[in-house]
Image 1 (spheres, rainbow, N blue to C red):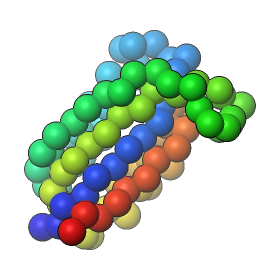
Image 2 (image 1 turned 90 degrees about the horizontal axis):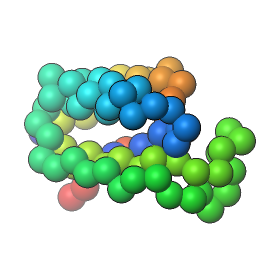
Image 3 (image 1 turned 90 degrees about the vertical axis):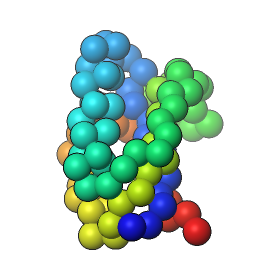
Length: 93
């Protein structure tokens, strides 16, 4: 198991329930394939530049342990989820 950190930026205009559902979907996938160490929401922030014609986004961070083979599927889930504007997954040492 490796340590990873992922940050996703969600559309700030979606409802709070939709935001919770998206976060729960990602958390469930990570929990099934590893262990969440920490999760933290940073709230709505103004973006440095427009992403998909949005000027604000809701930032959310997961610090987790998982196998390397589960990361491509996590990134695929990020890509097919319309509410997620941007994401990054980083392997920590």
